[in-house]
Image (cartoon, rainbow, N blue to C red; front, side):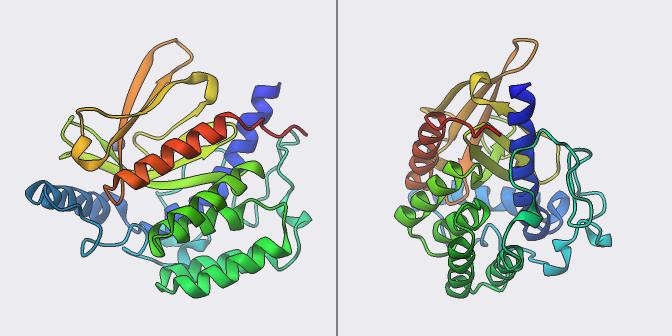
Length: 281
Ligand SMILES: [Zn+2]
């Protein structure tokens, strides 16, 4: 029962933060993959210099504000198959223990949306103001902190502030979100892209193309550690997950910026999340 509640709560968090997944990565089956491969190949050619600029921002690629609604035609085929909700289809599961959106201050969600739209327009200062206002307005809400974490990490390059906001999001039952490459061939030449969510409940990877998506609670995660060999030039790390059949599967990820600082941040946030007791209803 508790497990069900935890999973449900995690999904609610993921659902919300999947809006940026849907909207900010555009058409991942084509442009995202190509860009990712191209970018990594370019990084291979320039091993001595870590790539953080000139390749494309993780969430600035094909920003489309109209995609905020899952019902928008351009989002068809991208939406995950189950457990998802749109703003006009609120969750019915009584087990979920995140306050329903209508319990928040009326301006909370509009501010979040405006903050995300500011990010899509590459206006991080404005996004920061809007999201900070949202966080002040609804101190118990995790989502403003999740989005502030993304803003500070990928737009403002302020890792300390990003970590603070990520921890605050996790403490409130939300997720820290990282944009990552998922390795397919041991070389990161073939890969997919997606979002890694870290919460008090566990870890979830939401692949842009939905192919390698997984959700795992902390008990199922055997390792979340840096890689010594595979993708070490991209600051890669791995998440080893044991499934219900007790089979272990390894996922190698590279942080979007290929920076060790981003990898270390993910590792610290994960360790922090394992020490947080998931919220109970
Ligand atoms: Zn993949």
